[in-house]
Length: 190
Image (tube, rainbow, N blue to C red; front, side, top):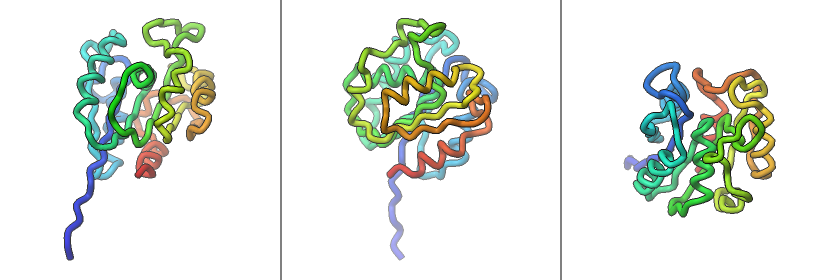
C-alpha cells in the first residue's frame, strides 16, 4: 500500500486585544483548543502583535503585510474580536495575493457604532465589495456576549448576506473552553 501525502491546511489566527501570554489571556485558550481539536493536518499560526494591551491598526497592518506574504497555499483566516475587525479592515484596504478558503469571524465589534467610536478601526464604506472573492464567510457571536454586544452582529450579517451565521447561546466572548461549531466549520472547508 502506497502512503499518500496529506496536504497541510494553514490557519492564520488573528487574536483579540489584550495580553496573549497564557491561559486566561485574550485568545490564547481558544487557539489552544483549536490546536487540540483539529487534526495534525492543520497548522495554526498565531502571531502576537507588539504591545497587545494597547493595539493600533498600524501595528496589525505591519504584521499582516509581513506574515501573509509567507503563504503561497490556500489559507483559512480566523479573527477573534478586535482581531477579526482589523483583519477585515486590512483585507478591504490592501491587496492580498493569497487564496482564502474561508474567513471565520468570532465576536467582532462594529467600530464607529455608538460607544465604539475608535476611528482607526472603522471599516471603509462598502468594505464588503472588496471581499467578494471570499466565498466562505462564517460569523459567530454569543447572544449575551459581555464584551461585544450581540447587536454588532447585525452589521456583519448585512454586509455578508451569504455568510453562515452562528448565533450562540450564552455570554461567552473568549471561548476559553473552545468553540466546537468553529472546529466543525473549519473541517468542512476543502
